[in-house]
Image (tube, rainbow, N blue to C red; front, side, top):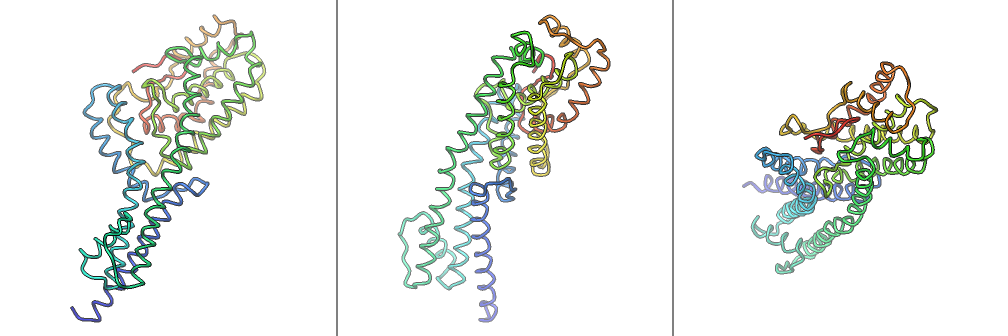
Length: 356
């Protein structure tokens, strides 16, 4: 090859290597260090590619329980795959740099890069500039692994806090959980207006969901330990309970319930908007019984009858109450349905029993 063309090729290859290394390190920092919800395209591609494999496997399952067991491995595998991809790209970038600086053949440069990245020290060089690059590559390799390892406790702490509320809801909302049963439990002392502390805890839970599931989006795909539970279904259950209270129960609106309802709507819609353009297509393996089912008028009337049996005073105009309930539910239904399909949440029909 002509010396001038070879020089140009080495310069272009070297610049490409620098850009690849900087882009990869930037992706790692924005993923775990930057304290705000920013979309990292590199991570999205990794998650989508891995999800395609899991979706293809889940299609072969003939029941929700089997699909749930398969998809339970998706988030952990995707999370562990991130540093593998990062280090592979950094290794490729440094391989290009070594070749651009004339360290030898591509095979020799790859061997040097791999040795440096894994801090093996099995390959030496006589040039001080190359030695500096090998040390920097070793430092970056350790940094990328350290970033993930240091943030694993943060991820699992957020997951644990989320699941505590999900588990407590199951105890209070019955089996299967319903908004009417939860509202009846809140009326244990004869007034749903008195349990502000519980609604305050749910408000804080929604705020944490919004923060953690957009700044560390992989948490949204971590499934509950029990197949019948889901943070999406629990979110819908709390919001359906508030909507049922506002639309059906005769009496003043508790201020704390209004704030919790607003926090829940904001949280679900912001998480939904974060994933909307980033999830490519919704999974197409969901059967007719999977996902969150919207309540029917019959479900609504059944819930009203249950509330009456628990001693709550209801509004007389059920037609207006049904219209009001649907209007309130429209504030979060789109986000709820999208997130339910995205995370393959177990079925829940709002005011009535869940079915799968």
